[in-house]
Every structure is written in structure tokens, then in C-alpha cells.
Amino acid sequence: MADIFKTDLRIVFQDTGHGPVVELATGAKGAAAVTGIDNLVQALTLRLLVDQGELESLGHSRYGSRIRELLGARLDHANLELMRRFVRQTLLDDQRVAEVVRVVVRSRSDAPGIVDVEAEVRARDGQSAQIGVSLDAA
Image (cartoon, rainbow, N blue to C red; front, side, top):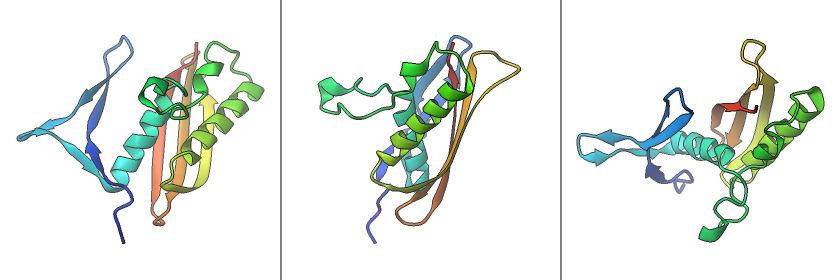
């Protein structure tokens, strides 16, 4: 069976206290690679963090998510449910995803304005993957 996950450059998400920073991971021989299910997790995380349409100039007008449409909105039940639906659709937009098993979107009571997103997907080859991101929705 062909490798449906492919290989990409590994990135590292760092919290600097002034918002997240994404950097290339390096190893002894230069840039590090990510393969297999880990590459799918990285790709889905990036897809959630990029605004849909942000890469239109590169020919990828549908890449990304619509989550930003809800940033600044009240974090009530209706908006959290809409965000959950946006996350689900974004995950399904990746052709390597066969099924979205679970999506949970919840606001943090200890950090107003922060939304935690947790999801589980099943890849086309049957493997499961967990994705988690936190968003500043204020």
C-alpha cells in the first residue's frame, strides 16, 4: 500500500508569551522530517490554524478553517457548536481523513477567551489520530 501520509518538514509550535510561534525543527543534519500519522496530525493542526482563503494567492483558496469568523464572538453554546462544526468540516477537507470520530470544543473557565479543541480522526488506512489546539478567541 502506498504511503498516504507522505513526508514533510517537521515544525515545532512554541508559546513565547506573545502568541504561538511556528519554527522548523532541526536535527544533526539540518531540517527534520515528519512522516506517517504524525505528518497527518501536523497537517491537520496547521489546517485548523490557517484561515480559509489565506493561501488563495498560492492557489489554495479552500485550504484552512473558518474558525476565525467566530473569534471575538460570545463563547456561548451556539457559537461553540458552530466552531465544532467548522472544525469537523476542516478535518474532513483533508483527503487522508476517512472519518471524524470526535470533536470537542470548550471554553476554559480558568482562562476567559481561550477555547480548547480536541478531535479524533480515523485515517483512510484505519489509523486513529488525536489533534488538539488552543485558540485565543477573545
